[in-house]
Image (tube, rainbow, N blue to C red; front, side):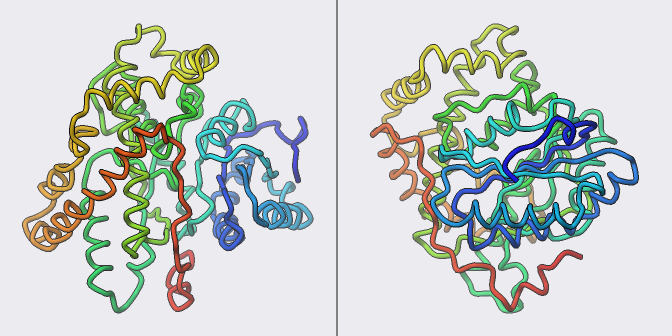
Length: 384
């Protein structure tokens, strides 16, 4: 399906967006794990409807054909009678930023109360994951976003290499920080999402940008981590980066994105008048229409004031050790080697990110070399 009718969009309570770029090898598996979720039966019991939109962006492989076939099969199986309908939006422009904007502001139903954001290369592990995430938002009026627990696929291996143990320890430090938002899967109140517009040059750290807007009520208050709640019994699985080239590319991508978020959140947006921050989506859209290069100029000005590549943004080198302090004494000892290794390794992608930004590069999203979810682990990864 490539379009939706006005009749099918009636009484939509929840909109699910799946973002995919050249995911022909994994998207069918991701969609299968999605439709195994108990969420759809629970929504039907309530008498409300749900839409699922697969937002493809600049795909050059068979992802569009595979996704369209999957949705057609679900339609033929009568999923609309269960209160679920879906379609494929095939956007010619590559990039998750544009896909996110299109899903929130153009493609999804205007009356939906919650938006799920889902990457097309993950597995949803527990059958109640999405239901628990949505309920967490319904039951917590102080929260604007709910998240689950992201799990690396290597955690399911019975025998782990030293490199894999370091990778899992690094993940443990990251998740120890308050108010974490993993862009692979989260649920956000629709009213909040519609007040967010992602600038086209934001690059690969849209989740960091959204997190800061959400936790500060659009930069009107100090950071409040409770705006992001963690749902119980909710998990998804993603493939970990374990080869050194893949780790370096991923960290370079993240550092480019985090630098841009720092420029936007810690400087530019805070200086806007209050009324412009409270209507931020409209403000940023108007800024971009009037001056498409506005953000790249801000980045250039920031780099001219940044003499050393390891000072692209605050906490670049110290963040791991700040997270380490949040762990228990035993966990600190176990994770300390990962913190030191991460610090040493991060210097290389930090320099790479610095040089890339100086060249004007913001759209850096390499296809990392991955081996795929290992067959021997798939049984353990199946939804519970």
